[in-house]
Image (cartoon, rainbow, N blue to C red):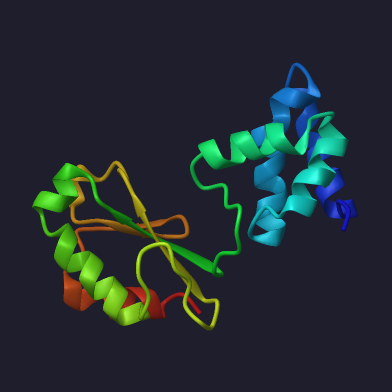
Length: 155
């Protein structure tokens, strides 16, 4: 697999905003992930050739950076905040409700590929805990009975 014409167009448009190609690595990985949902070894090899970087360099960045996925994920990413604030406001009950609704544990993807459930250290919504995020949509405070309706909104 190689970079698509659309990916190349978007990458070429982003490059002028960086002092060199290597500095654009995180942005380049986000571009490819947005189109493919995750960063395969092949995608990193393609990006490495484009950016003049090794697969190992890109893998180091991808595994360090938040929200870059090195294995397949669902169409929707569900993040449940496990910060101290959310934990003290009902994180455990919220996590259990999400896991029950989805039928998966943390770090797992539903069998239909619709959702991947991940913990996150903080969503920056301490005033609205316990909080969860689906894709880019923040929800909080979330009571366990609200989980089903929230998730149903994401086809």
